[in-house]
Picture 1 (tube, helix red, strand yellow):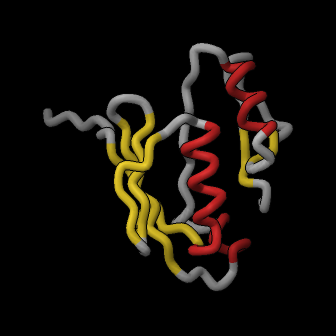
Picture 2 (cartoon, one colour):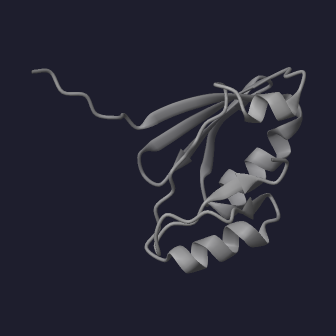
Length: 113
């Protein structure tokens, strides 16, 4: 039987006006590196081998975007969950949700949710 695993590349369509916040969060907070940028997209490397492309477009209603199939859920792993959670929350770009699934997991959401 053929097997499938998730690769190390992902992409998501996001509102054009979110570009600065996305760059700040993925570069400054998560220590990612912008590998390539042009007017319509950014390619960010997280860690040694995970790449995420942000394709910027015109989204008419952000509240609908955040609840649509165009949104992405991304699991982050850290060797120090408490420290990374604090760093992410202190950025002001996300907020902590009340739901928890375990002591090593923290659910975060874009501040606009």
